[in-house]
Length: 436
Image (tube, rainbow, N blue to C red; front, side, top):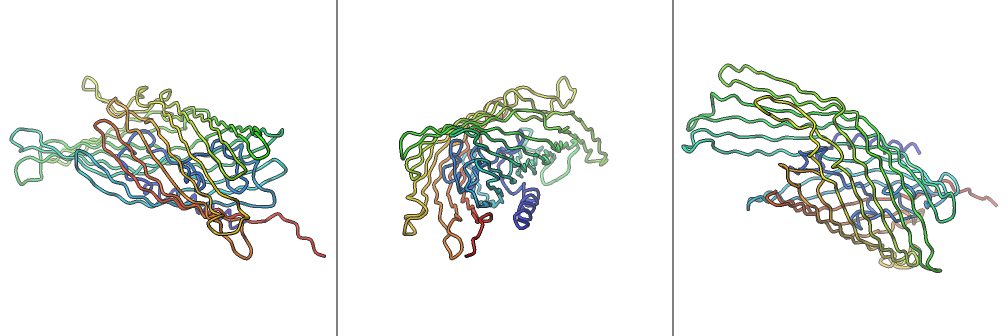
């Protein structure tokens, strides 16, 4: 047990230290950052499907009601990493970026009959970008400027959850999470006057946005199993997470620098309790044939449009850092996918594989210059590979490939190819041995 807790503590440290390595997307400069794919290696093979799935040998933290289905006598530990290549395309200009990231670490076990528990750590959002733009200000091309954009950080969560089946076929569950993180963004500009010179009489300006988050998040889940015959059943699931403030007071520090006198003039604009989480809800259905073929559909809604976000504005030559109620849009996402496998006890390596695939489409949750941000389309395919040795035949290696595209009218197009690797250790910890 000590090894598992040490592993989770290491996971927390990895998430805190490497949050900025999870993305290079310029879209992470908006809102709370790019929303993380909060799924395990098992779900990612189906592109994140899981609201209606009940697995006895996997921790499905998408819906905490599923914890009641976990096997007795076993302790499950699941951790995952990913590597990705992203191509950015804007007006014919292309650039590639590579990332590797620690994704999650979770554990679960059955506490009592029809009662399961899980705990773990995973990312919620990622911020990481560094790019610049430049242009000239006059027709003679004697005065130009360069803007530098940088950002790092993200929001993470560590959770503890339970799932309970109080009556046959009906399961309830919850995850209680502590969320924390730092969001750091900066914009700086400098001017260049005259050919071949790097000096200017125009003041340079920089804006630094920062926020530190320490709050909580609650997720509630429900699942109902409907038998359709001896070999078939249908599972209907739903989750709900109430929105609330994040106990964060972001600041914007604006600094003007005179290039001749080097005199700086910083001004800080704070806002109390300005960041929020929206109401989040999802529903899903899964058809299970003989525990071999599983097909499902998930729909989720995040009501970001009901939340506000701080923005820096200059109105009538008066600068201010104010809350905007027109910064976010509601995020809708639909996922379709499935899994096929002949079973865990059949002969032959390829017969024991679990084959998975899925596709999803999501609308943006942020607005950019008053218009909708990029839409997301992604597909994935993967395998669940059993790990068989002399002492264990219950652990699984989950590998999947995922392609995603973020695009919008007049916006940068991102094409990402990602490899996800997760390993689920399933150990018989609680079995009583009988000596004859």
